Every structure is written in C-alpha cells, then in structure tokens.
Image 1 (cartoon, rainbow, N blue to C red):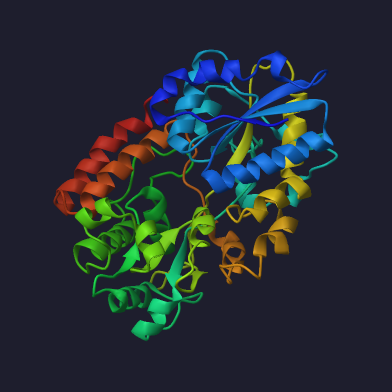
Image 2: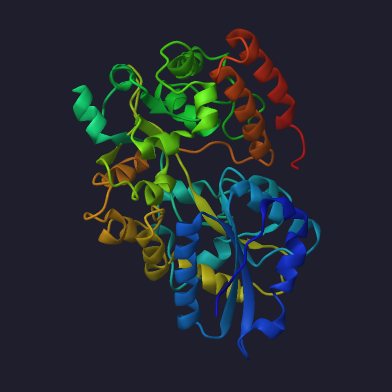
Length: 428
C-alpha cells in the first residue's frame, strides 16, 4: 500500500520525526521490506507519482513504498538537510540538478553509475544525454538518474494574438520579433510578457547571445553579468522589458497577481515557464493557448535552459537493492509513461518522450514537439556544491534590479561583489 503524507510549511523542523514515524515496520505489508521516497510537486504531479508507486508495488509486492511529498523545492531542501543531519535520510529522493551539488559534494548520495551499468532493465542510450550529463557531478560518473527534462518556453494566448493582429511565434523568431509582439499585446489592462527575474530565466538569453553566466562553467569563481559584452547586452535587454518597454507587469501588480494567474485570467499575452505549467494551464476554458520556443538573439543561436529532476539514493544505507529496483521501474517505459500522462513531465526516456503518452495530440499544448526540439539547444547551469545558494542570492538581487528598486549600474556591481565570495564558501 502507498502511504502519502504532507506537512505545513512551518514545521520543517519536525520532518525527520514524521519521516521516522512513517517508516515503522508495523505499517508495512507482512513480509515486505520498505523504502521511503521523498519528492516535491503540486497536487496533479503528486497524483502521478502516487499512481506510479502503486504500479511499482503491484509489480513488486515484496517492497512497500512510503511516499513523502512536499509542495516546493525549498521545502524539500529543508527536509533533506534536516534528515541527513539527523542521520535518517530517505532511501530515494527527487532533486533538481541545480540543487544536488551540495549533497554530492558531501558524499551524501550513492552514485548511480555502477547500478545503471549492471542493470538489465535500463541503458544509458535510453535517455537524453543532456539530462544524464547534468547529473554527472564529477563530469564522468552518473550520480542520480534524471527522470525528466524540460526547457524554458513561451506559452502564449492565441486569442490575444489574433485580436492584436500579430503572428503566433515560431521557431527562429528573434528578440526584435518578441519585443514587437509584447508591445502589441500590452494595453487596456493587459501585459505582453510575464517572466520572473531569476538566473534560470535570464540564462537562455545570455547563451543565445554568445555570453556566459560565469567565468568557468565547470569551476566558476564569479558571475560575469557585467564583464562580458555579450552577456551584458543580454542582461540589459532582459531588464529593459520591465524598466524601459513596460511590457511586463510592474512590481506592485506582480505582487498582487502572479504572471501565471494573470495568464489564466486571459490578461497576459506570453508567459515564460517550463513544462511544470501545463497541468494548471490545461484548466483554461475561455481561450486557446499553445507553446513556442524562446526567441533567438540577433546573430545568435537558439538556446534554452535545462530543467531536470533526478532520483538520487542516499549514501550510507546498508542495502540499496530495493531503492534501485524502484528507480529501475520509475525510469522504465511504464513508470515514465505514467508520469507523462500527468502532463507535467517531459520524459527523459526518449521512447516515451516521442510517444502519444507525452505528445498527447488531443490535449494542449498542440505544439508539444517544441519541448523535444529544444533538446539539442539545452544548456545547464553549474552543478557545484554552492550553486544553489549562489542562484538563490542572485535571484533576490536580480529582482531588485528588474523592478527598479536599485539603480542598474550600481546594482549590477553590487550583485557581482556580493555573490563572488559565495562561490568559495562550503555548502549550507
């Protein structure tokens, strides 16, 4: 039987006790061993994981799974940090590649490479190489098994495009096309673009223009938002969407209503997000919508940022057999197909990604192939031990700049100066 628990956000300190209470042998099917799986997701996503776990237990009756979900990645990080510190980590946990570095650097993750090499059910060739590479912490051996991959894309309100008389976006459209479109969609209480000011959102524009976020992607020591002309041009273009062109909702309006809520209400022309938005957007009944690739910099190349989560096994357990059996099922055609049905996941397994289980021609977005076409253009941010903190602190400062709370030149200088020491600090 699958057991699902959730906790209010304020009780991160109690998570270990709850986890231990959920792992008691008395709860398990008689004669079965048990593992605990910790992951994050919204209600639709968790429902997909629950269905997948039930299918695993039906196929593997000698293993019971305790599914312990939380709502957000921040809650997940708090839960994992607490459980590792207390010596009671879960058997399996799902973690984004931008956040697993701090655990891998401390030897807290059981590397997956030898398990995959010895598997009769899985092969490296089954999966997107870009997703796999993001979870090679040492650059060679696989640390965790990536269950999904997505890209940053443009969701657009087709009805607003038709009303404004602008063509819907297509592959190869440019920054200039994007800005002209955003301006045409702005007015009468509507805005052209909704985008959060963050590293994952700004990175594809930097890369498309030939720039870099950091001085060395493999061993970064500083951000390069001001030092490289190509990077600085992309940063300025991104900031100008708000500060100059006013095609993005201003600070006060964004605080009162998120871009996703605005898009759902039909008052936002374009919304930048990953595949995570699809289950919610499928609730839209009042207008048509679809998805398009990001625009390309003038004279630049297509680029997007990898969004990928992976199943990791906690190191130091006496036996990882049942944890790996679960991962083999979850990464196989049936497990990946079940999650693809939820609409939230772009499967990392190539055969499932190319199937109707994911492409779903009868459901929006009609242009789901966009996610697969982006695969060759996906890039990953650094996976160093301190990257999650670098990104968190940078996002906070980018928000200050994006909404004009600090002057641009001063703010960019202070951002690079404040963030630079974090690259050398031990992970928290």
